[in-house]
Image (cartoon, rainbow, N blue to C red; front, side, top):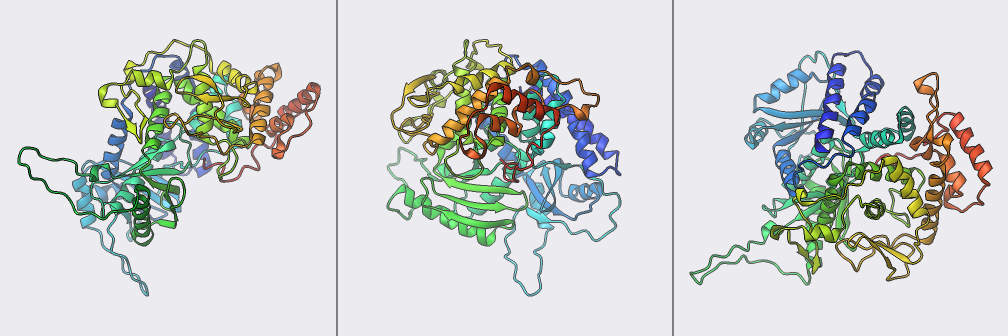
Length: 579
């Protein structure tokens, strides 16, 4: 799959070169040109859909490599108009540049990766602390820099990387142009997934925050987890980070002399109190010293204490936790599943988009199903196929070697890191069939008495009276969906049944032979994203409504299809585009 996406990026690079040759093209034209590559990419991905997974680097080695690259990078605030060649010539005086890209959030920014850390030191040596009238500057020398441009500008055409997903309206248009539901699901994934540039920016933000924490804990590491690294991240999603202090423990004792030295340290009443104290101090430093970090909040009394803030230069909403190693293992588990079969990611992205459009998931806390719970539901469904698409967590544990052994707070979190050891069972179901049967599976699932368990890959009796019970993969005594209430389960089931029914209708499955490609009415997956689906399921406004007869529902659907895009997504909030 990794090789497949590399090929796709080559197509994008071709479009990028064409954009650079069109200095008079406006931003909308550039976006239209870039997005015409979706169909080509979908065809490329389709060729390797059922291919056996090629050699994939381990989760830890990928994260280590990205973190090392981030340590050789700087983030530079640039003037609105800048000459790219002069910019690179100036920076190249301090060392060889390995990679760079521009993007826009609260202004124009550039991420520049040098070949060595020495180049970073040389660049910082040429920087000055700005003097501001009537104010005092905090003399903290970070790798977030500002470029002052006083000479002539010259040509200013730049290719800026997108940091947010396309709108639901635009997505429906792109999906309607595809030739099959399989290609629609691939197109959706390509449009929504994190780009390599966005991931690089996320690791750089972690590295900048680590520079702050290292003043107190020089051996610490700030590790991203969740959507940033689990292969299911969507453009605009939050940046979850973990303050790893394992390297600070200093457990290396030399035997033989009978003598040893220990650090004198402060002691706390409990590990939780120590975590709260550390995060409180880090939060103060971020608030007072770290440029670009605003809205710092200490949420220290939560089950997992955290610090929340906005990083304006990147546009990311950030959460920093500590002693949250189980979350890292959960991220690795999802990464493993996403790497085994390309269909896993396509189905997860599709179901997540469908759920967000119809209000099953939300960007705010509440009784909604979370993205993690929804992803586990997809994984469990794929374990139930005959033959199974994915192995169980116990099977991944049994394949693990001695170096993979991992026990966290008494819980066995061991999973195999060498993916070549995993032998799949050869399921060849199409994406269309998997999507159809996902809706059928959960449209008739006994949520009132059964629990989801991806460790065993079986349904179990509920151990507690919760509307939805999904066993935490690594903490079996916890229910990851305890927040979900009965109303939300009813809405989820109703929408699954309605979507399964629609995918059985010939009018939905067939693409219309419209005269113009821009006038193709929504069909297939695109039709499932229309508001009329929720209305027919009786769940509009999250209130149950009397179900219409089948004939009326077909009539409503056909009217939506004839009206083009049916106003889909007009009421989607900006928050919907972030997650």
